Amino acid sequence: MRANDQTRNILLVFIPAGICQAITGILQHGGLIASRNTYFTFTGSFENPGPYGGFLAMTFLITITYAWSHWHHFPLKQKIIALTTLVILFYSLVGSNSRASWLAIIVGILYFLHARLHHSHKFQWCITGCIITLFTGIALFFFRPDSATGRLQIWQVAIKIYQEVPIIGHGIDSFPATYMNAQAEYLNNNTNTLNKYLASNNTYAFNEFIRIACEQGCIGLILFCTLLLALFLPPTTTTRGKIAKTTLGGFFVFACFSYPAEILPLKIIFISLIATIANDAKPVYTLHTHRNVTYKFTGIIIGICLVPVILEYKSRIDIDQKLHSLSISTNKTPDTLLQKHYNKYKFCKDFILAYSHILYHAQKYKEALPLLEQAALLQPSIDILCDLGNCHAQQGNFDNAQHCFKQATRMVPCYLMPRYQLFCLYKEHNKTDLAKSIAQEILALKPKITNSTTLSIKKIVRTWCKNNS
Image (cartoon, rainbow, N blue to C red; front, top):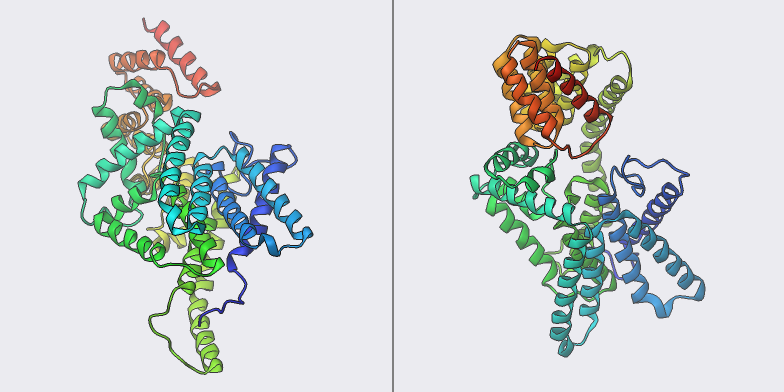
């Protein structure tokens, strides 16, 4: 069933959602609502300002293109509402400090203006738009150069991952499993000190095209780019189609510097944009059926599909609630519910990461060991490797513990904790020379973030060195 020209634009439902997010960010900035991130003020209901800025950018593009297209038909009241909405969204966008969302808006508006021009002026505007985009990109790079350089380093590591299996890739959702070990190898082979200070725990490619190449190879990337061409090449005649294309253009600019495929609200926007453009396209084949028959058949299919989904969703909610309650409880002893569902969710990354964390902090090292080994395969990080190393140390496996701590050190060289764990391991096994060597590295290392933990570590190590000099 295809919507006719009188059907309301489904994309407009995102405007009130964007307003709510923008107002939430403003209230967070004013201290009336707590931010969901320790280091950033504007986050809305998101974990950090990057996806938050991306969501606001998409709603801003929908709002400004819709208002622009209907401005002459708006009464004064609607014009005031539209302008107020744009001001609120713009203020929160600026506060988000999301450079990717700013660039997405600029490119999206340039594309929208290009589509409205007469054919004789489109080439000149295309050149002008490219120049504006280039200079904007350079300015945004120098706005936060360390962060931008860090993204470039992530892309260099990701290209190394792609080159390992360039045709078919490592598999869907494999990037978190491959990146940190690839980063460790990259930093180990690169002597540039700046690169080591830019590194951190990371599971995102910060470029959806690179992530697709790493996970699905050149085959998946070509198929995805073919989808883009199929969406953008056919001419668009309706207003909602132009709005959708403009927003989708901004979405893909944002996707070049962020990870919208990992954020549910942005995925919903992406699907809605594709559906709007597809609805606007010329149908290849039309099936004519009686309306009541269509509704009944669709209802039956949806009902059959929803039953297992609802049951599975209820089960996952129960597990998530139990994991959350144990994570914030002082008594972290896991109960029979988690043990009962282990076989069912043993290949679920989030379940394994949370369950292994709970077992480790409950000091059930023997039970936590296989789960931490699995977690280190699914999503390696310095925290998981340090926990795994401590489990091996508790079981008397010195070599395995040493390997975990050394690999964690290679992953993020500017973090003190892996070196400190290695120092403690050598100290406990009376390997004084090795402990002294690591102690000198700890004292000489300038940590990426100086806090009470890093100061305490250096004080402990310095005291030990004085006592064993």
